[in-house]
Image 1 (cartoon, rainbow, N blue to C red):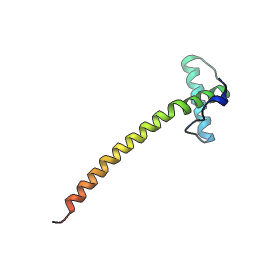
Image 2: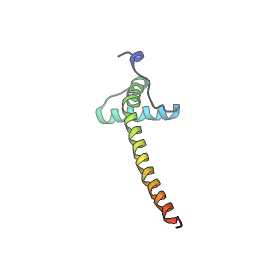
Image 3: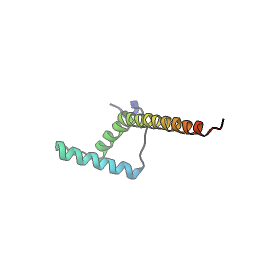
Image 4: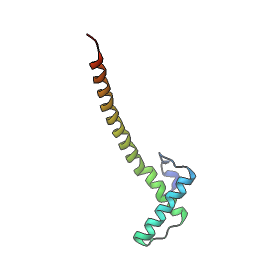
Length: 86
């Protein structure tokens, strides 16, 4: 598949994080499946995860934070109503 046809990753790591992630991918595939990847191949795998999988985790995290904040705001609102003077 040509890289030009692929959508760009939604989430991007800085260079140091990207190198660390490449090393994790290389080590995992070597230890688990006895596959040796070069930096180019590891970057392709990383790009796939960044494009297709990372947004799912990101969106789940956003949803979880929204739910948590909603609960907290409801609690704060309840506390404020309790302070109201009649």
